[in-house]
Image (cartoon, rainbow, N blue to C red):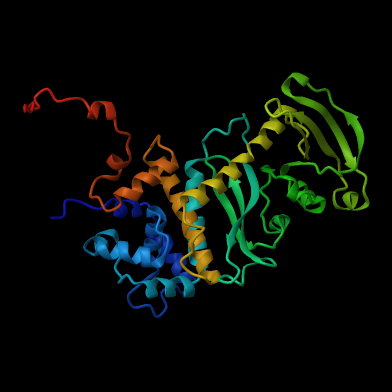
Length: 388
């Protein structure tokens, strides 16, 4: 007897159907499709992400066992390895990418009021990239090195909520700095980057867009000090200077002034040198903002450990990009649910609970809410005592 809807079906209620259909129609995803629609493909791949399925055979076996519940989960098509593999190979990955962007916009609105850790009313982004290793003999299109294949995941992370705003998937041999050419620079925002993105012509474009950047100076950076600023050495700041570059290409790329800050990390005793075009924020705030850049590293570590982006269910570029974008969609969807249901649990804990309760017919809020285990384990005074 059907006593309710499965947790998976309730979870998919947070997926906006109209926007998903728009993404499918934009790229003709259901053209000549009779039974296994783009929505069926998305639901199967999202199920695989949440339950840690490693292969097409794994996905097929798990879903066929629960075939009586598939219709209640929203999956209408027949599940088979060949059908799912064909869908991942043929259907445009941009469907998943555009829909992920829809979820990202929703999540950013929900997390817009979150605290940043510093009193700053600007939007702060962290930019970085990570390598996803692949087998060269299986993925020959993913050029990286002579005997190694990989794709690179370039990510611009909104530090309010740790929501990925811009994601670009390229071959592994594409240098990190090229992502700056694709970004739409938001006026007034702060972009935090490491030394890989120090290209003065590209940094000057950020400056001309009335945005700010914080990055680390390279060791061979040559400059001329215009004047020094007073600093409070008790905060860890050792030097504050207004400078200009002296190299020919440096001046050609960035003809304006820069701010140089030397900071000594009290925990690691490491000396860090920052460059920024923001001349108003206190130097300790600049140092703290750069420290927040570590959130994008944690984001990469999290998705690699808890989502399926290491073992792929297809070998074509389209299949790999589709799987990565659906993984990002699941991450953002869980973040949306966490906010809308006002849950205090971490994203990791929510995913772990969902992985074992997707087929259960229980209210999703009840499944994800914390349980007072001590109260649940209390002895019942009316329980009978067995005697031997």
